[in-house]
Image 1 (tube, helix red, strand yellow):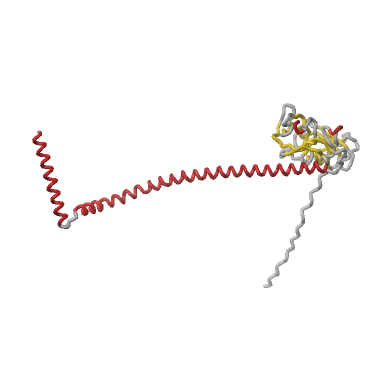
Image 2: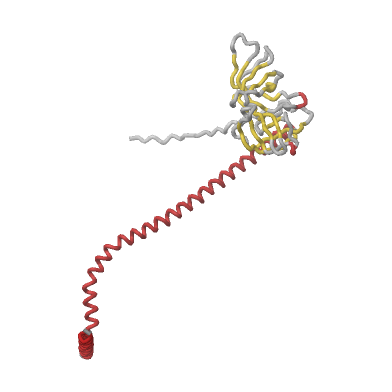
Length: 305
């Protein structure tokens, strides 16, 4: 067995030696066998390479497209986040502008009436265990706020302070069904009682059997003894409906409030006022009529046939 293995090894070495001498001889004679083999191999494999390339190119494009889709989705998500952030900033800026405008209107009304007020932001609107229509504000006894103080906005009466802690207070809105206050018809001495109805519409009961009211009459706060809970002269609303039912001892009606209680962001709490009653000085001015634009139409010249 060992002799047979040695013979095979010698035979293999002889074959390799002969092959080497043959290749060297061809190379010396100018025959580049290696190049010829390589060229033949390339010629044989080129069609296979083209077929493989055609088969693999769609897969490569698919992988590239999937990668691009992932990158696009990531960019879309980033843009959506940036867009949401910008929207939030715009809403915040809009709320800030609205609060500044409301604060300005509160100070304008307080200045015209010569009220001393402390401004407060509305924290929330909702119900309490006792009342159904309330606001919570971010100022309390530290700012001098006490129970039964009048609360106003730039448009008129909002309600009255019902309770206060050091840094917050609860405002009973005039829309609450338990709310009652005395009102006066602007320009007259006709008195009535305004009652909350749980909405922006209020009930009016005149005190005098001869009291005369009509749609559009402006109602002002009559005022309370010691200015609590109400200081006089604050605008409340306008008469929107008068009931003329027979058998009534006094006239009744419906009132639309000046203040939109659902959009209040800033209020003023009246801490003190001038000894002088503002009277009718706080009656809202009627909006100025819109300018009329006259359009002149010049007829086109007729065409004669």
